[in-house]
Length: 526
Ligand SMILES: Cc1ncc(COP(=O)(O)O)c(C=O)c1O
Image 1 (cartoon, rainbow, N blue to C red):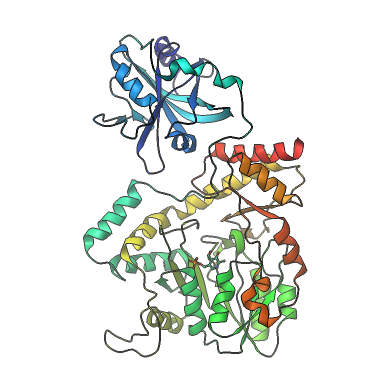
Image 2: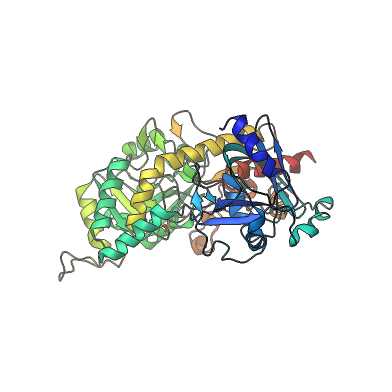
């Protein structure tokens, strides 16, 4: 953070000048808008308050950014101030912003540049006040722009009519998107090798090393990985496979595709498969179990592994929501015969589209899946069995490699935001996610529970906060399995009426989590 003297030097410009607030959007592009009603400062500590109009087109990007810069314009920059006060897209045209100390885009020729870490957001009516802790400030000679004929005139009244709902939205998930990702994709395009090429081979090697298995077989979705696994494990029509009902439907779908019978199991307090109920449902026809590390929390691996060992079942882990989750320092995906991962955009590790991987230590399973994903090919011209086109591509693999390097940091960020929710929501009449002592939860989804779920979701929606229900219809109540007449699962059926997913991803700002938590608190304390 800067010293007071430096900051005082910029204050002369600040108090009455026209200020343009700049930030970067999720893709690293500069965005900017003219501060609307006022700009204010505090000397100790150095804080800047800027008020902006939420109707500005780049407002969501400014809102999502953890940092912003304040540029004080000079009298010769009046045209620029008007350009930034408008809603046009090409504000930075012919204007190359230089990066400040925090990497924020600075308007060339401005009288002062102030870079801030965002420490507060106060929405009200058509305007939002952002509070920034000043991290760097520089001042230059010149006269500030005092008079402005644009929207400044209209900024006196709207603050007096605060609206209840905030017009911006906090999405459930914000996948990463930046220059490093784009460069990797472009380089893969330039390489001219698109399908199962060098980027795919590297990604497979790196992902297997990360998880700790001998093999990783890339494929084009988590569903495909599960489907291939069923085939490679030799599942036959009429076999029974234990699966939780409380999961994404593809877990059960893979079993159904193999013409086997999904035997639905209830959940425990972490929303994952209940080992006792699983044990009670084993029959002479049971061949395997598919535990799902749902929401990013590992299942009770010890109990499920014991059950599988005692009853001679294979175990296929569904890790589609749990990249990097661990049990006593061992990665999920290493406990069974094989495991399936999904790289769908909202997942902890994504490839910016659909994608998946099958991991295993078993050489035969890996070899079989490599054949299955490519039309059952033994080589270019010979097809040993029926497979399908489930291949992966190099452009997405290149992206996956970039994001795999960030996976642990992104999971740490998810955990930090979950802890932030935990602290902010403590004491409210809701159930927060639980974490078993031996488990490292990676919070693919942050799921709370309330008997007033519907009302709460509506209240948050009015405030522009997106929520989800994962999942409202459990697998055993899906019309497609009606013919199997699955028995009731009391815990699952109760949970699906009460669960609510709050926004959380590595791309969310602290301030967004605070905003959601404050809204949840307001709902219960009103
Ligand atoms: C638990 C679980 N299993 C399987 C899948 C299927 O993955 P994909 O969407 O990549 O096919 C998903 C995806 O949402 C999932 O969450």
